[in-house]
Length: 575
Image (tube, rainbow, N blue to C red; front, side, top):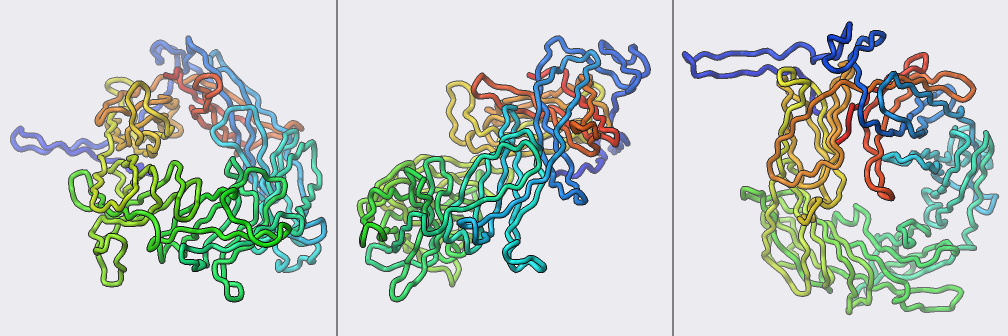
């Protein structure tokens, strides 16, 4: 986060060669009052001592509450959601009562007998629109943990909010991830209970053995193989190819027999990528040639190797004003392809980094020349590609292009765009700037409204800044759509200013953000047994968007005190 240091503004004037120094105010302007006359058209809430507003256009909001973790009670930080409440003013108050968390313990075992190392993820279902679905992940300890009897190992313990339905995913870890597929279930939690998980035994999985070989029949070790379903979920163990006997590139995969329409994914871990770029490949099993008996299928998966197949793509990336863009990340993704040489179908992706320049140790690649600064090269399977280039420099924009690659392409220059500039002022009135406020742009990764198409808007990135002593702010943004949120300093008594779906379509734009008097919503957080919740973080979200495409935008935040009380200061309007 940008430092909130108080700045001094130095103005050099031409009059008599004088220099005038204006010190910034010591504290930001605060919302305070003693009577209605202090509040313009709003009214004074004398109990709180702040001006509050009533809105002519009430809106609904949801609430998400983060319960603080408790080491003494063995409770992780839990998230619960509720809604819908009305922001209208008129001394609004809300009561948030949640059921007290209950203990959930259990073990994870293969076939009900053998302990398994795993992560157990509990994701509560909710009908409340919130930005992130809350989840709790617990990990079973290993048998090596001191003081744990082996058959008592791999047990987990946590606390969850009852009265909810949880989607549960159990993900084996370590060596168990090489021989067992994840499992998924549904837990309707009514109270504290044991929740023991029995994983399908290894011998009940669909076993698929095979080799990864290139066009000349050489096997390749160190590549990862897994199976995913149509939604992209892992439905198998994760295998790493290795040498078995005299055969290189051998893998053994165990697939959940209940999974359908799955695909093989072949990729390279980071350590492999350091030596040579390798694409991520999705393989349709329908094109594989099965060998051996039907009860022990083996496959040979042909993988493209840079020196043997594909077209060479080599080029350079430049900064907007010229000069090499060093360290930029280039991602190439095929939309759909079918490689005649290997028989691969599906998708192909590859990630590269632009060079700092030629070095004596660097090998000569497919371009047959040393890489210049900002240069890159790789072999790709012929097809239609989305090319995305992300620079290291925050002031430079994202480059996006569609390109058909069928033959060697050497020499193209990709010039990165400058980021657009959003300037503005956060003010209470023309003469009362709000400084030391956080202004942030949250990307929606959505198309720009209207007929204009700019693929880069789907990849726009977040940015934030702090207003200066005159309330000014400046944000460098990618062209795209954002939720623009200004948060005055805590304790100032001012609400957030929220501009949902703010379209940044111009290269330069100025926006004036006026801070109005807040809609004050008092509340109290407690458990259903009456126990008050102290230290809970309560965030209010407005629900925006059309039916079926609603989303949540944060509009205010508060923390409950020792008596469970909190005060939300919400914007008087959303636009």
